[in-house]
Amino acid sequence: MSTDSLSDTEFVVRSIAQTALENETVFCELDSVVGDGDFGYSLARGFEKVLESWDGYARIDSGAFLQAVAVTITSRVGGTSGPLWGTAFLRASMVAKGKTTLSGTDIVAMLRAAVEGIQHRGNAELGDKTLLDALVPAANELEAGVAEGGTTAEILDRVAAATRSAAEATTTMLAKRGRASYSGQRSIGSPDAGAIAVAVIIERLSDEWKLR
Image 1 (cartoon, rainbow, N blue to C red):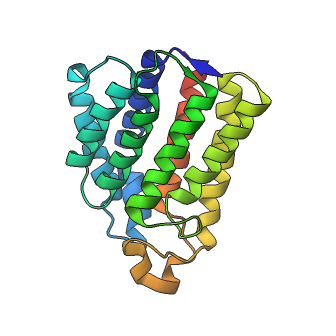
Image 2 (tube, helix red, strand yellow; image 1 turned 90 degrees about the vertical axis):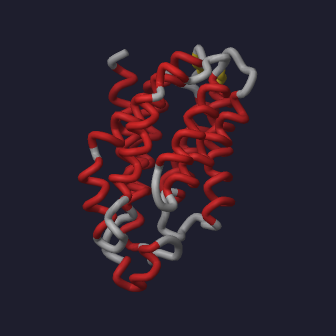
């Protein structure tokens, strides 16, 4: 698994942005069960701005491009999502900085860095019923797939399946972070909106990669 860096990075970010826009209502409905219901709206507005700013982003390498995206997300996504998603992109950009190509190992390191950034910024851990409960399994499966070999499409397929399973598993968890944690036991019985969003994003990316 390897990429030609910038064009593939652009493809991934555009896929994420379009998924956020197209699933705005769905993500809001998921968030409204025990949250304030604005997750989908906030994410969509941020990535809408990313697409509007697309042509003006620096393209020295993938790191520079992702850093520019991170700044947009941090400043334009509302609520707690902006700092978390912005930090994820910023941490990933630091791993990619200066590299003309990205190996499978680099991509794993980028996702791990994003996870660590979210953990630090959100003071959350695996099992707190947040997007981390989908992202960490995604990173684990990605690392396993890269180590075992296979095409990018094959690896994305297995990552998507693992992420969906992990996201759905948040249904039985008690929320310990974010607004959902205010609802206490009521948070049990519905999946975390952020975790489901991660699953939907990776599934969409996996499907689109095969059509390139």
